[in-house]
Image (cartoon, rainbow, N blue to C red; front, side, top):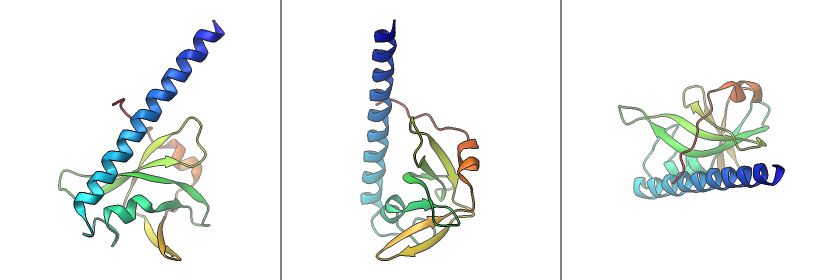
Amino acid sequence: MIAGSTALLAACNNARDAAGDKVERDAEASAVAAGPADAALGLSEAQLLDADLRGASGVERGDVVQIVRGADGKVDRLLNEIEDSNPDRFVHVPIAGLSTVPRGDDTDLSTSMTRGQMIALPEVKLLSP
């Protein structure tokens, strides 16, 4: 019974990893296609994907995985993987309320949301490829 449960868990993790990889590949392809154009907050899609999401104190809250546009074509939220979540937990974080924070040659995003508030957001289930 334990071996069967372990195999099922491993299969689920592999499917989730494959789905996450596909989302990241699609997001990177979209960023390349969009080029240097401003997507949101004065940043291009590529810059948004490279940004870390940080709390007000600078603590990392998550990684931007995908840019999500509303019906009007404007970026209205970001798909984020919550930092140190196990298993990986993905949530949409609204672009409203985020600000940019320069960090050397990079730019991160700052949110006033706590880790608990992010975890309370509805989880986004990634579909298997």
